[in-house]
Figure 1 (cartoon, rainbow, N blue to C red):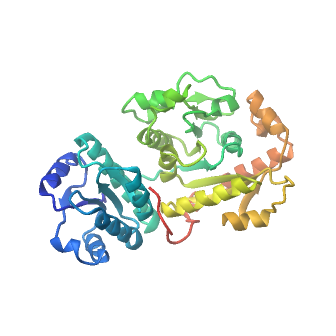
Figure 2 (figure 1 turned 45 degrees about the vertical axis):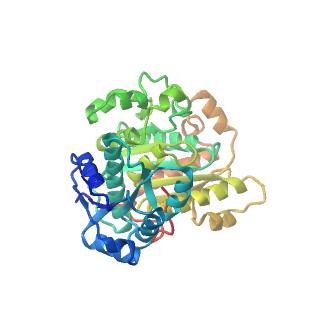
Figure 3 (figure 1 turned 30 degrees about the horizontal axis):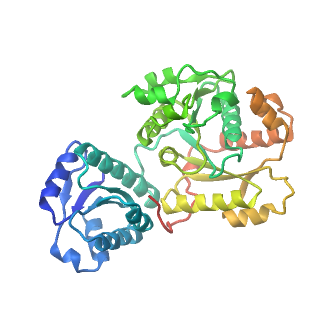
Length: 402
């Protein structure tokens, strides 16, 4: 069921304007306003919205900023599956206060109808995914396929090496049934790691407009292993054209066509990565044995928990695990808050394989690192079809980011 939208504002004229902007959405925006909202405990307002089945709450305009922040914090605390938009002038100062309160977006009340409509549409989608993650409702848009997103907050962790070797290994077990998407749209090098010269990239898919699963395959490059690849754009400028919506569309379309989709991402947690995570069944989190990488990964885990992205099964991969730098695996596991699913040793074969464009799982199949990577492949191929639906994150979120 599509989330209902409530508008908490004393401004009836704006309510009518916003209702017009979302008229094309499956849900209808309905103003919920009582003068007592300015005086009563915010938790009572939250409870009222929850009783009415509201999933998206638009706060303002016409409300004091402090009131909006108090209401947002109450929604975040009592009903984290609900999504809050603030309708106020988005300043850096306001964002610093809004983000910790769980606000999904801050949009100017003077924004045009197209921008307002998109903001509400994104909030509706986020609310439905949060409900699936926090409460456990089935999300009909979550693909039946397995979507494996590889994440690392730090560059140089071996994320692309892991994504390409995992993809090729899975394609060897299931030829023609695996696709990999390079969502590092500015500096992605999946194509180079697989020695491909793509005719099309995700940017071409983005500007193509409405496409179906059959048309989407036109934009893929094929690899000798039986793997299909949606490559990153040729330049950072072209990468700027790929938005959150384009990333979600690309991964979603491929998940309808392929039983397994692997997604390589940029370092950090940008909007395209969030789009992939939201439809993922599995997250592979990668760190190396240095303090900076471990701390950054811990922050990433906390961010995912705060975003209520806890339904995906998590797999922690420790790269260059044999480096003698004073950090032991048990200490790293404690710091990250996860047990390692796989430890990869250092190997000269890895950078060599990346330079020549042949994954180490193919070029040096008997090497220790290739054998460990094959173990990761087997972990995915051996698991039952429903095993990825078992949540591995904490039962309740601690805090939320945008």
